[in-house]
Length: 271
Image (cartoon, rainbow, N blue to C red; front, top):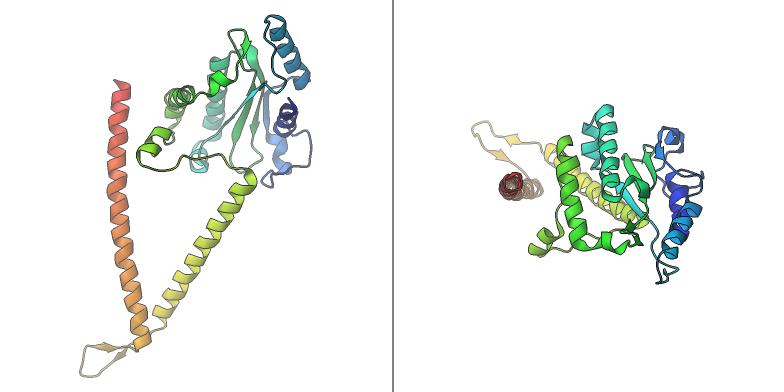
């Protein structure tokens, strides 16, 4: 219940003090509020009290009283969509959640356009068959089925691809993706950016070293002489080129095989 108020403050931008540095407050007026309640906490308390009045078993004081969906797509995919397509996409996203939970259980829906990538926050009341039952919505088979259904009913019509399934990761022996806090995620992204920058600087230095070589061509010979240091530089660049070429070739084969597997799965799904 305490986290519910925090979600409302963030989603509806009820304060100018944000922990997320990516929020551009100058663009917050572009956010779209599809619907909200005047007092979210009180409305949820009333719903919980209503359910409690119809059952003998006492509802735990720490029971989940809301489910929050955050729906988006990759930055590249969102950039490909026109403003009209993006508006239609998020409208379809909202309809999908409403169909899953019923319009009676929707609490708020806000589209954020003041951050790096547009995304939709939807809060719903987790009622199922007259009971407060958030747990049933979070069982792994239910989540997998929901993501499969979303990919077919919503994502496909906008050219979006479904993310990698947990079962596929486990089959490959890879670790499943885990949610990370914003601070941890941004720290890792910064470290990765610094690593790539260092590689780029090294490549730039290598190229500059190659360009600085001055060939000495003999009058009666077609051979070019270089210093031992210059030879080592050229040799290293040649080896790196061969390794890069082999890596790209392997990745291309892997990508083709993956595309073929996806095509087969889509054909089975269509059938």
